[in-house]
Amino acid sequence: MIDENDPSGRDSHVWISTAWNDAVGVTPMTRREYERHWRAGQPKEIGEKYSELLERTYNKVPKGEVLVSEEIGDVWYYGSQDGNPAPNFMNGGGLPVLSDSAKTVLEQFDLGETYFHLIRLQAPAGHATTDEPYYILNVCNKRSMGNYLALGPEGDLTAPLNNRYGKRFTPRSGWEHKLVVAPEALGGPDIWIDQKTPRIFFLSERLVSALKAAGVDDGWGLVRCPVGVL
Image (cartoon, rainbow, N blue to C red):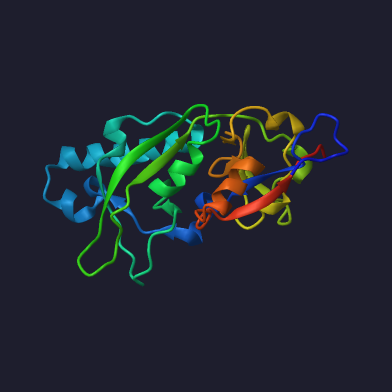
């Protein structure tokens, strides 16, 4: 949607994917090498190696750093207990995971430095899964959302940003709709992250419109976010 009163022709809003920031919505998923039963049969040094790999992977993705093959793995355990199909986007055990159908839509847009790391979902016995390929979504485009200090002081329970550590902010789950993106953040690829507000994705209006039109916007936890200066 273009603001007709804005001579620059910029979008008047963007979208935020909140699913990655929602601990309640985490989909049970684990890489085979991180599964405790697998590690139990391995030498101690192997178990320690994969514990370190897991921590490194979870730290790199929110920072927009590119994963390497060792950090990705090829088999991940996932299974739906209720028999419903996996959503097109999910917080897979703390990592953003994307379906092949949604990936096809994203690839029609300017993705800049965005990487799709293929994983194979394997369901435990008695659990439903899917044959569709899934990917860890590794977005390395970085832009500043801005407005950090104006969004409320640390400790204010009504503020959408919380837990400020030096120069890092954490979005409060469920309050993402109160964020406001600075106009300067709109130039560039259609999906990006802000290292100061980790664990959420920012998406352009045109990209979200395409996801909705294709019916692959489920699981993203999309909320509309206005553009402006506070």
